[in-house]
Length: 577
Image 1 (tube, rainbow, N blue to C red):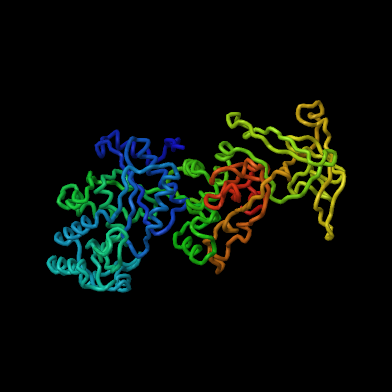
Image 2 (cartoon, helix red, strand yellow):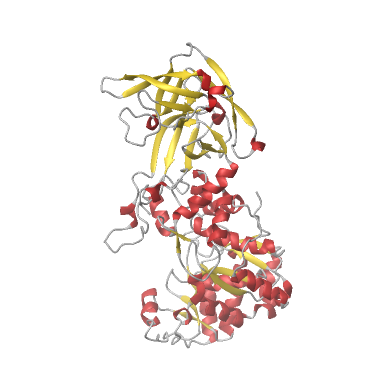
């Protein structure tokens, strides 16, 4: 499915419209999605992906996927591959695949320019000393004792840093801005640090690596990005973003980008503008990569793609369609106001998409035997069921029917409460697509547990016969016990049992709020046509919910289905929201 153009206007879209009308950036639109490959993408990233790729698509521009790989101590090729898969799964394709490491020589040349211009210096303060010198929100910082080194000395030290003469953490290159600035990000921020560690792309060619704030704006400029869209936490970083671009003046120093052509990379060179928007936050989850990684490392979940995780890999495996994520991002909108969206809104988007796109199948996940006594032993026939009740284009399918069936245990009660309209001793209920049956007797085990219900079928109520219009209050589904295929059914729910698992005011952490019922595995029974499908095929199991064939474990010999979402919001009904 291709992603649709934005349906609603918002301030970023209007900015682009105004910029094009004014001829800014020559009318071009160029965006980028710039993840750091230090973990798997989560639902919150979907908003940035949809916004950056969507804006570029709508205005005939381009959008790059750029890996901001400037911190090799935390980055891994596993994350790189997962990010690429997630972007494609969401329905987007990048114009160019870039890496911040593609521009390491450019970053270095720009740093030497800043040193020559007296705008950067090598500092010997330790990390703790830098923090102490930085000051607070109410107190100005103090100049580093190394701030007034000459350009010659700084250049010599910086080149020796690159040559590997100094140990990790012993020196940094800092921008010389203003230690008394009210914006702490402008108090001589570090733009290079020493890290003697191998890089996934450049190997051991470098032992100094640029800081994100420094590398990001130069990468945007080199790629000719017009609108650098990022989340609100970077709003206070925008003055530093603009300072770097102004002082380096990249468009007027093409010699700084000479290394690009040597690597076969084109460099449009532009003066991008950073625009911030609010993040996508959901209740009943955590979005911190650090916390998500802790859940994986501590085996509190079964990996980054555990279907309970809010990672894109996780929700994909659970069965959330990419269109539902795009719909969520559209409905949440693009604003500058931070807010927390109810998880039920996401689940509603999933239901809406799957209700339209998922074929229907019969399945039973907590089976109870039902025997139709007035059918002969060995009775077997084939019924025709529509694949989708609202869309004839889905066609029909054949469903086997026999004397012995499986029904849901909750569809029978020996001692029913008032208002129970399903099967009871002596009561009647309609079997979906079959007719009306009456419970005549029960079979129990030695513990008094009902193991089978024996019924008679009113054959006059079968479809197409005059009695088919006879009314009863309850209709239940079933599968043929003779023909049904055993399947592993994984019943997933929200990973946390409180709306704000990050709230530690009571001394608890998010680990203490894990939902013990977030995963249950049962053996169920499915009609044969549900088993012989490829992985990631979605169905509505009638009356039970929306399920998807597991991406990795499902096969026709051992079907495995994950519950993506229930048919209704059970959390709201239970008062859990």
